[in-house]
Image (cartoon, rainbow, N blue to C red; front, side, top):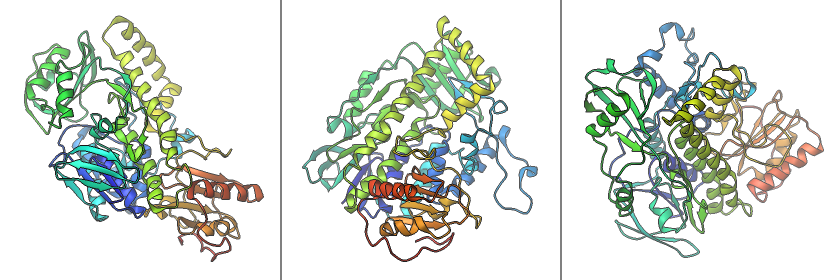
Length: 536
């Protein structure tokens, strides 16, 4: 086996799929016998939705959003919202998110801001909760023919230099590479001896969907009290509680049990009800839970390294933090997209020197930012007088057009970038919505993975010079393209772009191809590339 991925959550599923598209032999090991029913993330951000779009999964995500809108009646569309004559649905409601429980007003946001306006094609596919996302990705993985081995727990590992020998409850596994996507209490990280520094927990949170006998006792939205905060909504029965009197009392014991592979004790109806009564100051009664409730803290840690030898980490195995701002799931999917094609290139044997090292270098700064973004929200949410005063100041800023727009851009992920060489403003950013002359979008041509080169030169100069990499790069011609040329990595990051066709542009393209796709596979004077819509 070329790669063994531990963990069948969204991160592990995305990573395995990306590796398979590179031709790697992949298997997934999952400790749980069945997919988790626990309540987790409620939506995805723009980079995650665009990752689905790049693999042809946006229509499925849009269907999930339509179903969610029907479930959340206050946001449901009416028939008047549908476009005449069919076609793509009209844009749905603007989901802005919140900062420290302060919901951002969509009417204040400057949606014409260039960063936001450049990424609207996925607006209909962002309201995708984690459980539905896992189902969608499981179907994707199944279509790729990848085995998911459930009920198998990792118990030991040995990096032999040319591979990894993995001990599991189902017997030993020999694999070329091992990637831990097994969550914040990662067994792979622990067995690999990778440190996990950061800040310890100071609060306890609960998330659940429940039947509530007297829901009128609860206010809609976020409410603060001396004992904590809670939110009721936006869908019926959904409650979130936050208590600032310390982490769960059994945290050390829970940590020990998790190291032994024993699942942590489930969150009970009484746990959620007790917490909700405490922070709301009511005697509200919960009568049933829908699915598994979750308990969480503001534990914020980042692995000392995302890779040690042939053992790598992604998702919560590499970083944990509180769920405020909805960044965790998206951060993990970004890890998987970044690592997948790079490790796939190493397995395939064509990776340029140092390519795998760029995984840690590119993803670590974003992970560190997310940890601080969530820590900042905890700082303004506490029930003490100083935090309450700070919350008023932050609320004032977020009630301005500039403040709301800034926060929405950060939460949505549209400003994320990688530090890459080149002076074009697109380089290092996620590729924007580039629509082509035939009505298609550039991402429509990349569902099978690999690099995409958009060539807008009249004579196909860029595609001709890049044809030596034809086995790794697909070419799309559009004589009216703006910019004139764009090279997009498999993870959606723009590796090169140019508004000109001069020698400097050609030289920059060839440098980017060598940097990211390795040595050429053929002659640069290869077969000419067809017009827009034809992909080589």
